[in-house]
Length: 93
Image (cartoon, rainbow, N blue to C red; front, top):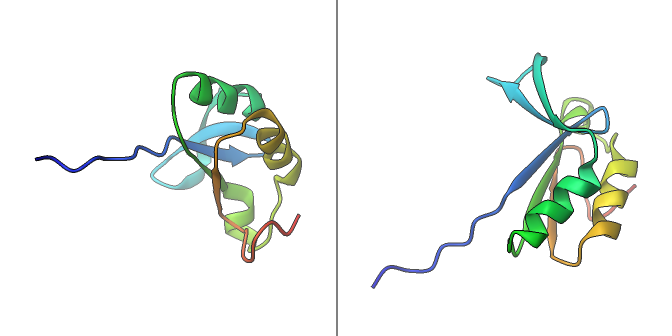
């Protein structure tokens, strides 16, 4: 029997937008969605049970930077959201 697998779709935030970096390079960025809340809703509506959200700006400076985008995501969905990148102790926006 194959064990169940939970997929965590990821939203990487840079300057308030959903992005992907090329090899972790902040200067090589592709913007996928300028509305993190809309992207989170799309994942939730597609049936995703969890989200993984990374504040890339925060990861580089060691404190939350994209708190407004994170707050918009949290307001937009009811599924659990795991935070990373600058978020050190719970929700410290």
